[in-house]
Image (cartoon, rainbow, N blue to C red; front, top):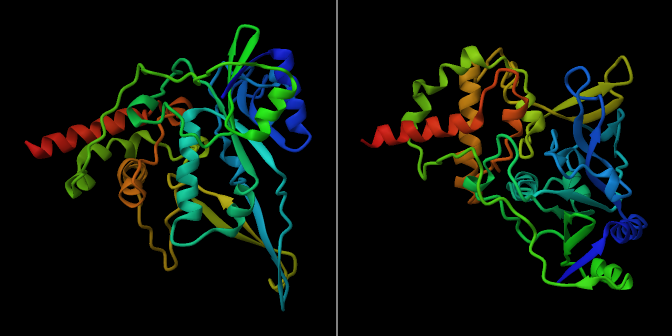
Length: 337
């Protein structure tokens, strides 16, 4: 079912939803970008259509809503532990098709990875999604080749702004009732989606072990500076570390936090005894890339990378993930000759 309403009427829909849900969407933060006098687009609370930035790709993904950068899990004393109180308010998150596919990967890791993460699950159970139509490609996007340009129907309604009107495909009965209360015009609505990207990738069906030892990774030992930006903006990166903060000198009272981490940063693979599994940036790049386009698919049936291109957008060394994918494909083809 679809509806067409004015922008003013759609704000009434948001107002009504806001009575029950927190509404998150991409918001343009003027002057808060990575460089002087630049903006940044990141997720924040919204109350109206005007608050949302719908004409630009968000620089940071939505995942901080589901997986906070720093999250206190529990408090401990000498004799007991107490699980930390969590903000589990009902929320609606507005995102694009590629990011909606990314949610599936987050769920794989936290809910279908041999056990269920109770902290993630508590938040996830209170989150619903609204789809932002995506009519044209942004810089560095390659969602079409990744098969993430068309959204799965895991959303409650969609929005596409056309002039002074908003078109919505509505799946949720709860949302449909709100539109009906406004006497909204009904018509068939198909959410806009990208049909072609300027950037293209080819992903091999099978990646032989020989690629693991290929020299294609060597250049990244000198090019990559290990800043971890790519992991921070990626909607599917899930690496974290645990940190204990002690309140007493004897170390028996404090709290345990889950903190977002990066597989590209020096020290991430350090283990007791001074060992380190991946010492060079080339080795770390290999691990990340093969996890995104091979390892995750072997286990869960789909690629982890969704082709959003945020890692390319943010890399200070202009390393393009799409180029690396194509280099892997070329290496596989050469192996087969």
